[in-house]
Length: 90
Image (cartoon, rainbow, N blue to C red; front, side, top):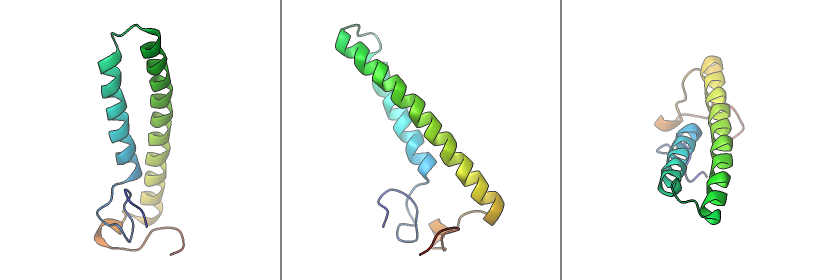
């Protein structure tokens, strides 16, 4: 069973790319709060956050690509309405 993502067991869940987009927005918000702090610790955290943002962006793009592929191959997902998964084994 998934906790956050839409599935047969969790039709009210979110799409992976939507979760990643929200997470990226929160990291950006945190970056804004420390952007003017030039202490070494803040600079280190900011550098780490920039790497995290790059990885999140790559993950978002991969997730969106998978969604587009599944939409083209099998049509829109019906999981949010209790429908079966488009791929995989139950």
